[in-house]
Image (cartoon, rainbow, N blue to C red; front, side, top):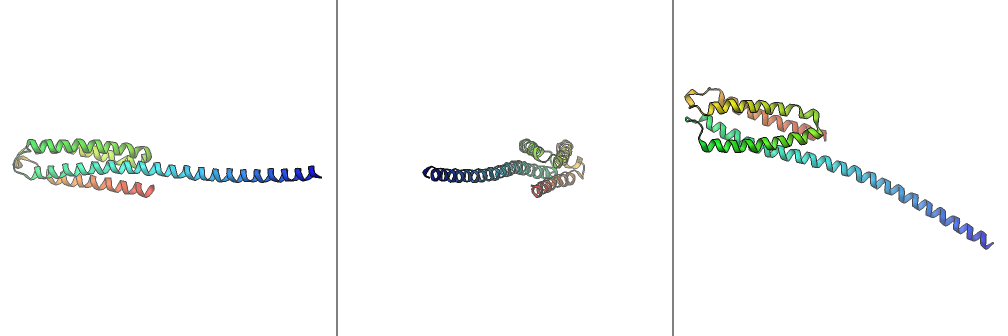
Length: 171
């Protein structure tokens, strides 16, 4: 009789421990899955944040370049050495930031990345043309160069902002 009671208690204890272990394993699996999902979301958010930070830095420097070149193109004399140095520094900083932004963007959103680098190539082509105009006195410059420069740069800035907003909606 004592053996039966002992076996009965042992069986009940084993069953209880088994059920508790299964509950703990189920809960652990749920927590692991939930944590993994949260981790993936954090990685995506971090990539988006890196991308937007790079584009923010690029736009800041690009806007300085746009503004200074716009002032240069409205002045009577050709571009000064100070302005040339300032524009080149901002241009290099903008180029580096945009390239980093394109790289981050391409990893997560390859389809959306196709447009912006092409637009930026057009800006680089325009930079060469405008740099040639800037060394001329105002009377010898193409009269549309200042408007072309400012409007093209503004269009590019708006394109970057729009693409970031599209990507934010997708995320």
